[in-house]
Every structure is written in C-alpha cells, then in structure tokens.
Length: 432
Image 1 (cartoon, rainbow, N blue to C red):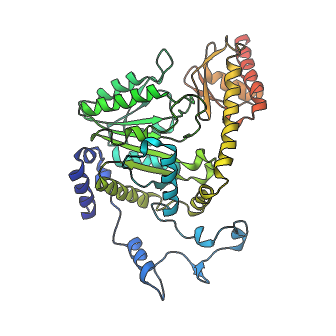
Image 2: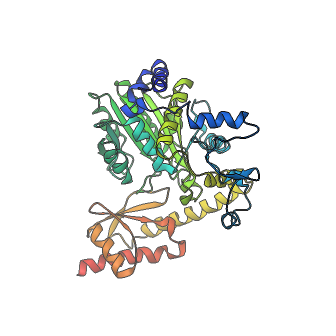
Image 3: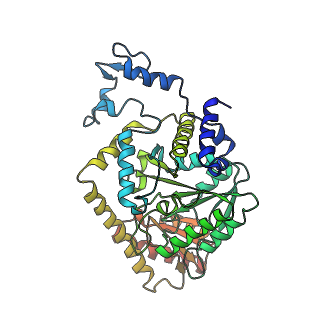
C-alpha cells in the first residue's frame, strides 16, 4: 500500500477507528498524490516567475489560449475563469460560497464540525464517490422501496452491494422509520450499513415532517448504539423545494456528530436547486468532530476524483459561483420556487377534487419535482405505453401500479389537461 494511503489510514484510525472500519478496500488504498505532476505544477505556479513549463494547457499573451468562436459567446467572463483546469477539489471560491449557503439554509449545522464541500460532477458522481470509498462487496446499502433507480447501478452493480429496501410509507402514509430501524438492526452481525436518505424523495415528492425526522435520526442512533457502523448519506438533490409543512433543512445537520459510529455525508448540488441541470455541478461534504478525519477523507475523495474525472468542468463552476454572488440571485430563485409551488398546489387540488377517485389514489407529496399515482384498476406499464402512443403523453411506470408524474416540466395551465388525459387513458384500457 502506498505510504500516503497508510498515513491517511493511520490518521483516520487514530481519530475514529469506526470510520476506518467503514472504508472499503479501495477506500483504504486510495490517496491523493503529493508528489507528481499536480504537486510539481502547483509548486511551479508559486515560484516559476520567468517560465512555467509545467502546466498542461496552451497559453498566449499571458493567458489561456482559446478560440474566438467559443469566447465570443462567453466574453462576459475572463478566459482564466473558463479554460484552465479547475482544481480537483473545485474552485476554492465556489466551495466557500456553497459552504456559506449550507450554513444559511441549515441552522442545525451552526455548531457542528464539517468539512469544506468538494465539487463533484453533479450528484451521481458524489454518490459514486461514496460507493467507491465505503462500499465493499456484500455490504448492506439501505434505502426505501420507492427510490431513484440509479442507486442500483451505483451501489449494486458497480460495487456489488447487498441492496436492502424497506417500505417508504406506513399504513398511515408517514415515513416508515420503524422499517428503517429494522433494516439497520438486521445488519448487527456484519456491523456495517450504508443508508441513503433522499428528501424530497424521487419518485414520490415526499419530505418527512419534523417528528418523522427525529424518528429517522433516532433509528440511526439506535443502530450505532447497537454496535453498527453507519455511513448515512443525505441525497439532497431537490433540496429547498419544500412546499408545505415538512422538514425545511437537510437531516445532515441532525446527523452530524450524532455518534462516533455514524459518518454523515451530504451530497447536493446546483443542478436542480439552481435549475442548471446540464452544468453538472455538485458537492460532497463530510461531517466529523475530528479535523484529522475530515482532512483524510478529503484527500481520499480527491484521489477518487483524480483517478476518474481528474477535475470537474471549470466554466460551469464559474457560472454557478457568479450566480451565488449576484444580488439578484435570491429574488430570482424565489420567483422560480413560487412557480414550482404553484404547480404542486394545482396538482394537489386536482387530485383532491374527487373526479379521479375511481382510478387512483396518490402517495403523499409536499416537495420536489414529482408525485406518484397509485393506480387502482390498470397496470402502470400498460397505461404508460397507451398514453404515449395514443395521446403523446409521457409518464414513468414504477412497478405494477405506480405512475410517476413530473409536474416540474408542465406549465400550470396544462396540468388539468394532463391528468384528464391520464384518466382517459385508464378508461380506454378498461373498455378495451
């Protein structure tokens, strides 16, 4: 094993042996090179005042070389903020701005110790980093039965995890914290579990209330006190889009410093929060009472980034940073939030009108981009295909009876027509 990896492992083990035990074999072996091209280039950047022949970009006239046909469209930005490689951890100013945003939006973090957000190539990349660092073949990865299907690829296929699902909702249609607790305590023999908490939930658009949040935290604490090392990841892809009386901040704040056997990790990003999906700017943030653990995990994360994508795209980081710094940012974001909330409220009013009661129930939704119908009389896949072929309406079939509808991409004035067409599609299938 490389001496740098050994040093990082020793630092983690000395500070918190439970976190060390959470690491996968890859997580133990990975490190960020301190000697090599990057470190030598960094040193030259400080000291090579005459000629710096280390950097792997082309320059001219004292700045990065670039094409006019590209920069003509981007001339509001300095070439130095677009064309050179971004640091593997991301632009320092962006990391600082995102940390400040996290603190503002998550008051529970105020007195917690957590690392500087590290820039990822959006949230899937952040989840992939978690999988690489902490998931060994056969490890239990626990998340609800209503989930984003990419978890299976990221954790199950890539890392051969043992995927453990529990029902998202109780019979009272609240978050099933007892199901989470049971799934966790079932891992007592192995002594390790990875938990993914995705709120607002994809596909249902559900975020738990405050009391449910306390139950979730208690379940994770109970597992830790039972001797289980828990890596708990808050997948906060749709963070901030809370339309009703639910949790208004990430559970990351409550989970940070919860127990020595709990490692809290926040994966979030600008992609959906700031409506810049194609920019692919996400973040991964670790919480720990130990600065040594935080530093070592950052180095290991940079090692994964260096070994996979090397660094994230520079232009989109600059665009997001400039947006966060703009005095118009908060107002414009509030305006878009109002549009999204209006759509969600309209959908709920339609569904509560009674006109569709013979065709479906719906799962609770109070946030995010989506809602999920629970069909009573037809199969979801048959309905999906019929709607697509007969009416040109696209929806997502999940299992036998669940149909996901993204109200985020439908103008409010067209929502009633959309649900009428879904209802008509059901009538067509019943009469066929």
